[in-house]
Length: 322
Image (cartoon, rainbow, N blue to C red):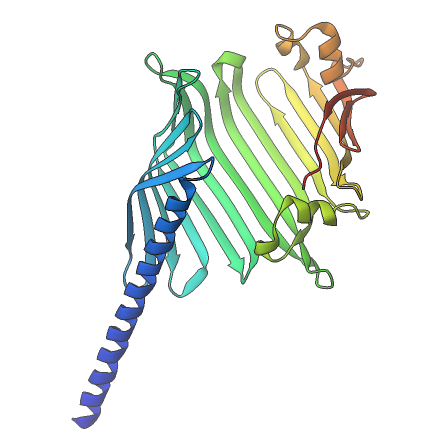
């Protein structure tokens, strides 16, 4: 009897203790979120949450923001609901879900657009302060113009993007790591540009990224990217629709002065003529390159100390990424 009594007391203490801890942590989450939204009111990008709720007791923390709004100058974006879930026994893995439709209104231009989807979710997993994996997936996305009724601007049947740490390429001496990137778009349509059954797929390698998330910045990347065999390597970027196709491969890095440098090969088929109503023949040759005997176009793009070159023609100047 005494053993049962002491066991019961122990269980009650555990339950009461964890209940108090959960309530305390949830209140801290609420306070930090409210501080964040309040601080944003003095920034160029202002965020506001009409209702913030923390639920999921006892084994989860479900943080739900209802009617999230983002304002920047004349641009207003409203999202009905965003929910973030973290399991108590797996605190380094977070899930995010969003409900639409998203309203995008520009009071300066008078434009009004809406984004809808069937499902949209994101996942982030860390190893301490190192990003292990991040994913974003969505199905049946539509962008509509809503000024007069609903006019389809673009749609995607599916979208997914993943960034995964390659542990075998870690450099423990300078505390950097590498990330494999994969993204795919399926069944894309854009009636205004006569795009039907469009697909796009990319694989890339992001090199020499600080392992500590707190140290992530453009300045840190540009500092790491001036060594040989560093930077962003696009191994595959291929897309096609019912008329055209594109392919891009290359690498982007920086100089010791943090200026962008790199080279990209741009191949396309039956794409240049689709821009003939907005570009003249000289501009088409500059952007897409000359047509070869098989009917495809090729152009070489390069970054030379921050200057973007299309072939041998400078077309754009960029600032150091820092």
